[in-house]
Length: 343
Ligand SMILES: [Zn+2]
Image 1 (spheres, rainbow, N blue to C red):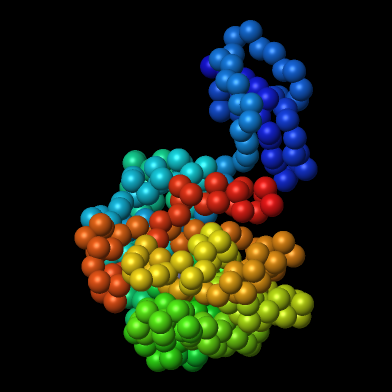
Image 2: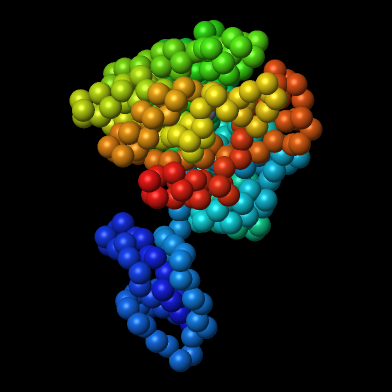
């Protein structure tokens, strides 16, 4: 079965292709790329005005299975991924039970193989139960296909704990991904601390609550030699820390989400729309501008969604009671094309 895709705007950075060409697919292989291709036996689809890109990968996604299937599951969220142009996603370990051992990694892989609509690369917890107390079964998880370690949803609160996890875990050659949040400083913060939080009477989540851990994690990565990736970076100062670490030659990378790039705290108004309640919170316009500059100069290594579905009833609660998180898999590519490519 052959498929001839005509007149698409084809983008493939790997071969520096960015223009209007035809693509011929035979079976599961790309057979030809070029202008004015013909193939009598092929089904022809005219893609004039559309983009054709290699399958996208989202390195930060919450699939909610096992344990939180009322919010979403591997089948539903990988369907959202495929709909949004993603052919691979890295799942976060804050499942129930927590993905902190090989059995849960194996479970995710088996469900993804049976029902998934795209590839699933599971990450595993850095600490058992995401509690920040005991190192997780890292070797066991890697044996079963875990691609990275993270306590996403929590920062590892103890610097000594992070050091031990990195010292031990780096033998497996995987990257440590940090959700940076000093829980003592952030407390019950709901949105970015500043004029908007004051006006709306919501407890503030200060930028320093994220930046302190970014700096700490970079220093501990330097101490241990571990590879560090900062997740969903949201502040200009935090990004500068990553920029400085890279300039020093440290193996430090970071990601930014579409919502931190294209929305600011000013989106939150007197309607208290809980869709805008995310962790870390939407920051200032200056922060968003700095993140976009970081994408352009390469300091931001990846755009990742932090796709985090919740049930309607949970997001319908009062702002303080609603959980953090918004979805992103189906809107990320469109937002990036509209706000970054077209501008
Ligand atoms: Zn996170």
